[in-house]
Length: 85
Length: 238
Image (cartoon, rainbow over all chains, first blue to last red; front, side, top):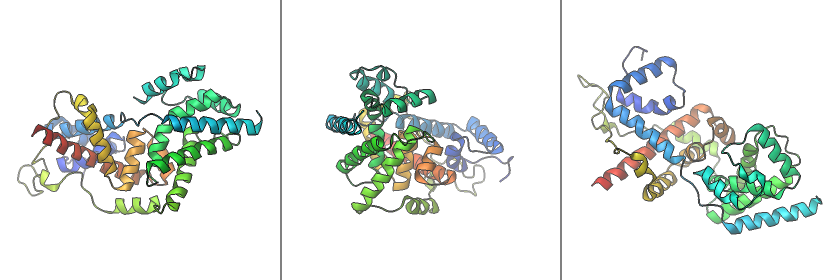
């Protein structure tokens, strides 16, 4: 596929991650962006991918269980005592 | 958010280090923190525990069969940190070092619990198979006269404010399930990259995979998660 050739939607959805990772060579990036400008379906698709990624970054684990923290601090105090500092 | 949470949990620890809990440590800050750890500063340890326990636990869960074992592995990691801090030379970041202690212990435990398949083996297998981002039926045929390989069934909008829907408690629980259901190598990469916000370099180093394979796995994982959310939203719309 040459740089001038138009990108298809099927090709674009496979290149979304490379695009977002900045791993697309310049000519492909240009074709990608050119396609997005003209294709509402792909624009929506890219948008949804961005939303998914942002949301994943906000999935948080329950905070540290207090019991685990207490055990750790005990481990810490023992360690400190043992090394005599 | 992580940052907010660490601020909240650190607030009751009091000491000055706890007042500033940025998401990633600046080099000078990291040096000060390591020095404080060596000096046996309990507040510094508490800070590190608060910042890394959640991420360590999630990564440990990738290797061992249960949450209880994962918690033990995290405890062992703290012991490893204490035992090694005097010898830690700062060639890698504190985070990278901590996670390398964790993955070593988790792998050992995983083996003992009979759950260890080398990451390189299943990740290579996952990469080798063909896996399109979407079902082929979503696109027009390649020999279509006007729009070859263009959308037959384009994605439907997720509404005016998708953030709100995405952050709803049910959606987040669903997202967590969607990740849990991924093939193991994809699950590991998306957990580290998108949930834990590691850089691709950190992930490649920790897992011993190439940049290219890392991207393939990340792409497939994200594509699956998006697809699964699409199904979820469509069901919700009825």
